[in-house]
Amino acid sequence: MENVVEINKDVNIVAYYFRQGAKRLRCFPKKMEWGGKSVVFTEQGLRHPTRKGARMIHVFDMTDGSADYRLEFDAEQLSWKLVYIADQAYGPMEPEYAASHLAAAH
Amino acid sequence: MQHPTLQLPINRAEPLVMHIDLNSCFATVEQQARPLLRGKPLAITNRLTRNACVVAASIEAKVLGVKVGMTFADAKLLAPKLIMLETDPPKYHHVYQILVNIMRSYSPNVIMKSIDEGIINFSGTTAIINQRPLENIGYEIKKRLKDEVGCWMRCNIGIAPNRFLAKTAASLHKPDGLDTIDHTNLRKTLSQLQLTDLSGIAERNQARLNACGIYTPLQFLDAPADVLRRHVFKSVCGEDWYKRLRGYEVGDFESSVKTVGRQFVLDDMRPSEETLRSRLAYLCETTAMKLRYKGLCARGIYIYLLYAGGDSWYERRMFKSTFFSNSEVHRRATLLFNRRPRGDWVRMMAVSCYALEPSNMNQVSMLDEVNREVWLTRAVDEINNQFGEFTLTYASSLNAKSVVKQKIPFGSTRYFELLLNRA
Image (cartoon, rainbow over all chains, first blue to last red; front, side, top):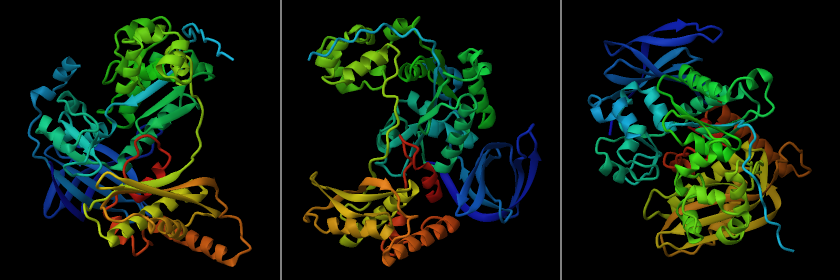
């Protein structure tokens, strides 16, 4: 079982915005300040929209390489919330799960 | 009159049906969302309890023997390092929407069979698409899925003259395969498969076929339609299989909604009367929501109870008037529920509405109480749409709301939008 720590608190985020061709502006939350600490995100897993009543919420699943973070951006209030931190006690990837091994298994 | 024996050659038509299947969809989407889970055995369940069953397993978990339908406890025995996560419907819906958009950009004839698989029929598409080999389009779809969702997303693609063979082709090389089955390689492909590899053939159908001396898909293909119809399946299904295996389309029709309902396995092993009524109120409320979401009203209601001892009880009733509001579904369901046999603990309960008709909510009634009910229902729905589902709800169903969770629908995507509002 994973260690999920629910936070549900507003946080400060520094975000980058990118334009890719004709697509809409893409947001990448780069840095988060929360509880006197700052976290620099290295990768965005998935961004997906969801609704809370009529409010549009954009959910960002981010990682800094050692833990997964779920952030929510409220498009109406323009506020960022840290929903949870999945503190990974998973350990390093094991050789039996490596791509070469899986390909051989199939 | 004796039924004429059906004799058809293998369909030599160009393969224009493409089946797209996301690999271990929910697990892959979770791994996409959370990079630290990639390469780890992961299983997705609807509820994080020991006896909840696995609804999706990652490729890494499947290698270790974890299968869909297994309980969490059994899966954990096979793979002690298995990570179990609860379903997150908005995430899957986002990926589903992207997949649908990609598919619709190639042909308007797109059918989603479930959340993670769909079919594109390329017959009649514009020349600019038709002049390209479908394999190229398949690889382009794979690339677009990676670009638009993320690098971890993979899908199997199968191309064939009909939907059944396209699905079979998509399951040949998992994960991330792309295969074509047409008249040139049909026999060769089937010779490499077992009967249970065919979609729709599980243990029972296999036993039926074996009883008639059919042990391989090739023997199944060579069996006459008459034998399949009269001796193996003893119904028109035999002829359907005869056509399906030869690459002809079968069952290409849209079915309409006949019933709308919900069911729930009780969380309490010895539920009190109060608990049962609270769960019933919640099931009625969500059933009525589904009815209105589909723009329907019902005339019949059905209650089913399964008891701890294994006995079951059901009762149904048709009413003269139609109904669609939460209170009316609840009132009529309670009438039946009160007649249930007592003496054993209820394990599962289900509420269904049938005899469905298009909703008459927009029709102003001559009866004032009917109008008031419509206005009240509309006002409650508006408030709930604005501020989130169950902002206004029955006091009796309040404690059920935190317990009865809407599960991710496996087959149909009919209620996906409604489910997301509630998620």
